[in-house]
Each structure stands twice: as C-alpha cells, then as structure tokens.
Image 1 (cartoon, rainbow, N blue to C red):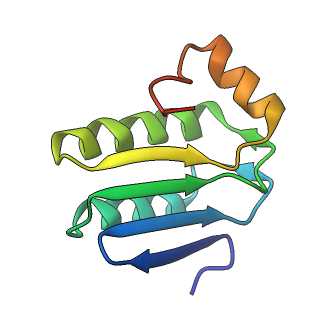
Image 2 (cartoon, one colour):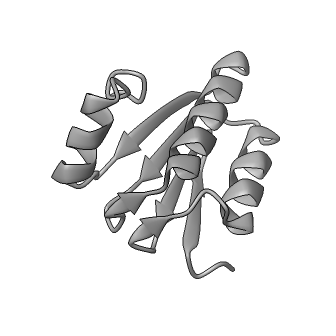
Length: 101
C-alpha cells in the first residue's frame, strides 16, 4: 500500500485520499493510481485533497487529463475536502466548476 495515496473502494465508488501536502504531477504513484482507476468498473471517484496544500502545474494537468478520460467513460469525478487557498487557486484558473467545487 502506498503511504502517499490511499484508495478506498465501496460498491461503484472510489475515494482517493492524498496524504502528502504536495500533489506532484511527476509522482509515479499518482500516474499509476489514476491510470488504474480508469480500468475499474466504477461510476464515481472522489479526489480527497484534505491534506494537500500545493498542487504542481503538472499535477493540475494530470488531474485535468484524468477528469477528461473519466468523462469519456461516464465516471463522475469530484474533488472533496479541499483547502480554501487551493480552492481559490482553482477558481482563478476557472477549474472549480470543472471539478464540481
């Protein structure tokens, strides 16, 4: 089990809990986790950013790519438990509605 990313599966739902303060798009764990989720038969994915303070630009790019691929597979993706400053950053980038914030 990865210490930086915890995955909780329940029925057709997956909650991905990021346990590090920095969500780094270069992380092989992030790439592998998001890729493996797209292969599962789920209808909802919750990206839990409770502990995340900073998302790298590549991290944002990976989340956008994941969301687009999930949309193609009719998987709903939502960000939950987001820090207020990070939420404001996503609003400035006009990504808040894209991720259901």
